[in-house]
Length: 300
Image (cartoon, rainbow, N blue to C red; front, side, top):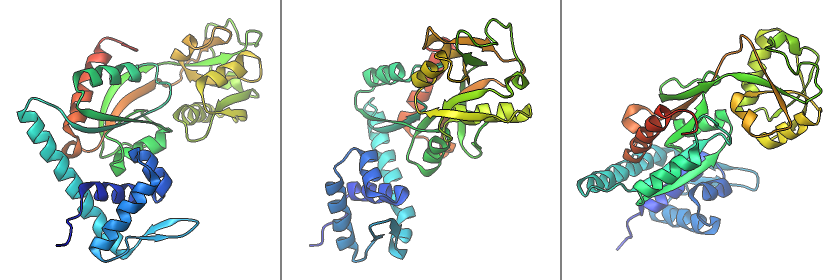
């Protein structure tokens, strides 16, 4: 008798189809790449058709793979709904919750939030992914993430659910001997000619700072580019450049100095989810906790 395909095989298939990369897909699902490859080969054997065109440079869907993808997504969604329905009757919450976030939100303590969620719902498997703003929103749209904590006003969230969490001002971080230290406030055009330290171009803070300065007609040079907040502030505190950052960065480095920026838009963080009909029960439970945390104030 021919074996019926397993949901795990479909999950492997969807992950590779969305990532178009076996290593990234395996990392996303926290499984060994060899096991994922074997599962997909088994699925292809059962279906009697190859689902991917594999080469040393890239992975592409075949016609059969493109036909299977929407059906596989529907099957996984229905299986998730079935688990949620049974768990609800039993008064339990199960399944998987995939969360995306910037590394340093400040206005929301994501690790503590997830710890409280795990304590309340131990049957839910948690997955956390740090990424840039564009990739987080793309992850929600593609179904790779159930919830993403990301800034608003940088990339379109049209068609997605948006729960505002908190906002804070943007400030200038600079070294203790910088010419602007001690000012009650500066304007973006006061930064003309400065050398900047910043994150990579995919990070929301970088894009937000670009917009603030572009609106003021300031052309800037990013001479030092790093991928973590502590390195930004270490370089700034040593006088190697300045940075435009959210105000909560003031609590990360005692050697840098911070100056308010007048007329700059606020840094607004939100929980972004798929459209209403696609929000899982576990995601709804997390959103309720987010609302409670936001009600207690930043970092609650």
